[in-house]
Amino acid sequence: MIRQIRRLTAVGFGVTALLAAGAVPANASSTEGRETTAQDRCVYEEEINLTFCITSTDRRIEVHAPSGVVVMQGEAEYSSTTTHRGETTTSTGSSRYVSVYAWYVDGLIYEANVIKLDGTSTMTFPDGRTCTFDSNFLVAVEKGGYDHGSISCTGP
Image (cartoon, rainbow, N blue to C red; front, side, top):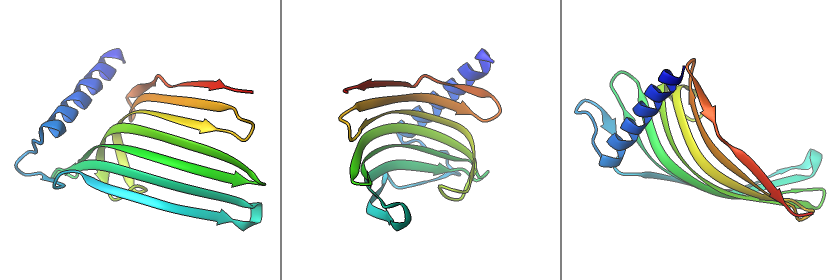
């Protein structure tokens, strides 16, 4: 199992190096530079009196191989507020990722092979408590992976 994780990690680093260098196999298609997706919206759920607002930006490059395999490398940032019963929780965060998909239609319809994510999020709760979530994980479908995430909180 350790060898599999090392092999997958090496593949992940290889994919990262390939994308960072801008190299794409001759028969594959790639986005022209980084694509940026941004959103700024609020959702109100009247039944439970909850408002959720988010502002986020995702920058990534995608490589689509003729076999259907898709590789994505990118980074994302977000900030959000959730208000429920007059109390507000805020959250901010950022992450970097590399994902390899056997096939990919959109963010809801895909078959992931390998996902590597590093990121940090900070939440501030109505009572003044602040928690920081550090994420560092690799998931290889049917092969294992690791999750070296941590949570630390301060405040009342």
